[in-house]
Image (cartoon, rainbow, N blue to C red; front, side, top):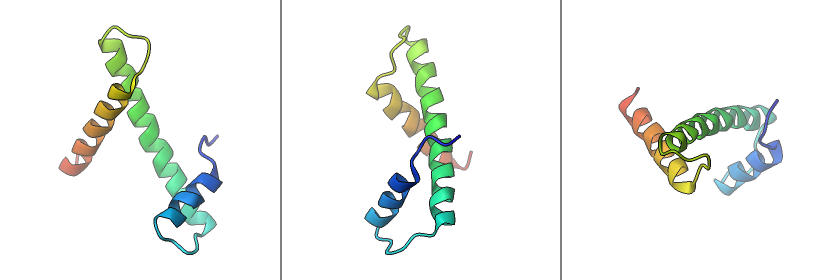
Length: 76
């Protein structure tokens, strides 16, 4: 089951400058974004738990996304 609406993905592509977007391209981007979002969410939950909190806050999301970006830049 997918969580992101394909229409939202299409809007993002158009915002990025695409005049037309194939259904396959929208689906591929949706899969990538959902995978990345899930990874960031899992790391953010772990950060909140490590801090003794049940609530994930924006700092947890930002830190988790920076970690993922750094790992991507390093090719890990």
